[in-house]
Every structure is written in C-alpha cells, then in structure tokens.
Image 1 (cartoon, one colour):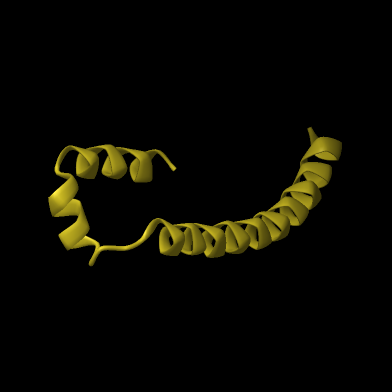
Image 2 (tube, one colour):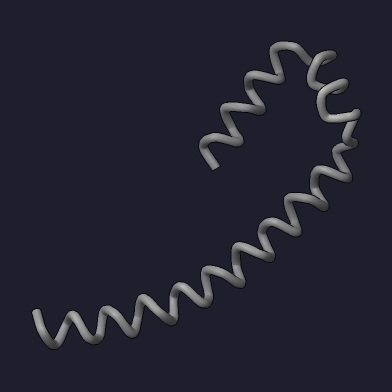
Length: 63
C-alpha cells in the first residue's frame, strides 16, 4: 500500500509523463485493477487468517 502511494505521488508531479507511462489508464480501468487486487488479497487473507488461527492455537497452548 505504502509503495503504491509513493509511486502515485511521484507520478502526480509529472502528470503528463504518468499518462504516457501508464498508456493513459483511465480512472475506471485503475479502479477495476484495484478491485481485482482487493479481491485477490481478501482471498489470500482468508487463507492466511485460517492458518494463523491454527498456529496461534498451537502456540497458545505451548506458551
């Protein structure tokens, strides 16, 4: 998240340059890409969450 924010601010300085570099991605396309990323993350987080809970239970009893 932080890295993306930094990149955005960097490109914000050279708006024109940013448009060329990103092949003039529209806001709508960016939102779609972000949406895909969020969905993928949420799925991964769910998996990780289940794993973490299992690990916590094991560590909790031993700790």
